[in-house]
Length: 270
Image (cartoon, rainbow, N blue to C red):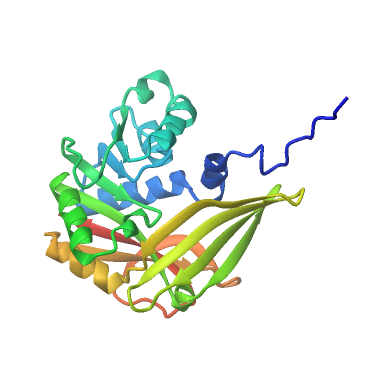
């Protein structure tokens, strides 16, 4: 009688659950969005659109925070939207779940009622490699906002961002690997992967892959202005004085530091 081989940890893993545990912190993201919008606009935001929403974890966290809040998630991948409905929307109380709408569509063409906030996080908008296409997306985001709405973006950089490298971060039971596999200094194109390595030695190679342009902050701010936004502000992450690592606190700045690697938010006001 043949003995059935037990699946490896990689074979039995869920890449979306691993991504959420390793990459996303929806609570911290919504804290930042909530606080900055209230400070800039003098009121609490009620409606949010999460572009390139993936599993819609951020959209679900948004409605969880307030009884009257609504969220729309937009993504082109029906499979990942289905995962988000099963795991994130379904985990909400029934009333909150009804205030989340997940839309399969292209962020360049989708038509949705105006919202207070549009979010494009995890560098997802870098899929637009040509300046004209990026400007078109920013213009679409501008049009999707209420008169005092705000677009939130994130960005990363630093001299290590232009290198081919692997960064490993240990978690309980596995290691998260960020792999910058290629960079072209002429076009700005970059190819990155996320891998997961497990305690039994198995690997989930290229669980996610990203074919992006590595945009710089000056370029992004220029295109935001071209798209009609009246002001964009960079919120720079501070550093822990003991470890030198990012401390998770983002403050508005006019000048940054020439770090090996940095992460920042861009807040663009209509």
